[in-house]
Structures are given as structure tokens and as C-alpha cells.
Image (cartoon, rainbow, N blue to C red; front, side, top):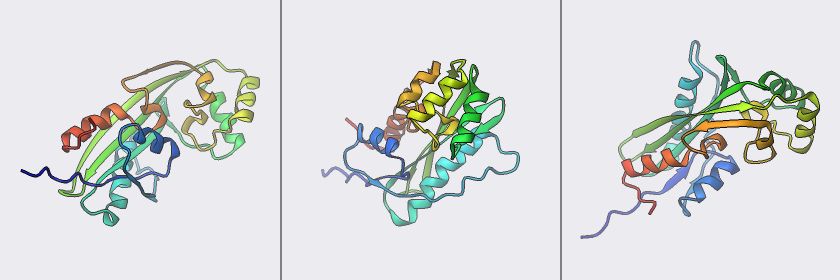
Length: 197
């Protein structure tokens, strides 16, 4: 009896870090730009925002990829109920790191695997608690000079020099902090019948 064909796999992200992480599991996949409005809804919790956006990103590219499995992912950095987004420039990155020094931040990652064959979205939320070192202004300036992490929530790129800003990590998946929780993704692959091994 013939084995059913493996559906195409699409990563709904332009992040080179997510692409590199996915390539550890699967060699053959496509990448699509989800172009999704990331504005929070009124009274939406940060966690609900990340979950909604992960699915919205997958659904945004679905019309161009019928019959595919589409991965969407979104991450928010939350401390005391406040969202710390991508700073965008040096001044805001300095301000973020000054506010977050010595504090614990939840880098909450929403993950969605959308099966366009049946329009079913499998969604998970993965928290990672990051405690920042009690950084001096000098250390913050030295970090941003060497690694201007203006496109990273919380202004820290943990997959690079930003690991030096961190005193402690607590979470179920070391890849979640970079933006694509591979352990949870393997679970979702199994749920949809996609074999990694």
C-alpha cells in the first residue's frame, strides 16, 4: 500500500534564526513573509497576543500554500504585565535594558502548526523565564555597541552576545527563547502525522 505523500512545509517567518532552527529538524521547507498586523487588541493579555499572532501569521500565508503544513510563531517579552517589544533604535534599547536589569521577564512564545488540508490550527504557548543580570549602564552600552539588538524583544539576542546579559533561564525548551520551540514543534508534527525521524 503506498504511503501518503508528505505535505509541503512552510515557515511563516522571515527570521533567519527561526529558519536556522527549523533546518535542524527538516531540510526541505519553504519560507513565506506573513505580513501580519501585530497591534494588540484592547484588553488582550500578552500571552493571548502571542498565541493569536502565531496563528494569524500561519493563516496569512495559507492562501498561497494549499495542502501545506504552515508554521507560525510569535514572541512577546512581558515583565509585570508590560510588553517589551522590539526597540527599533539605540535609545529605546538602552531604556529597555535599564528597566529590565535585575528583573525576570517572561519571553512567551506562541506556536501554531496550521494544517491547510483540514484548516485545523494546532496552537501551543511556551513560556521562558529570563532573569537579567543587574547590569551597569556601562555594560549595557558595551553590549549594544557590539550587538545592536534593535530587532529583538527585550533588546537582548540570547543566541549571540546577549547571553552575557542573562543570569538565569527557566523553561522547557532552550530553542523557545530564540523564537521557535522545537520540542513543542516536534509534538505538533506528530499530531499531524509528519515524521521527523
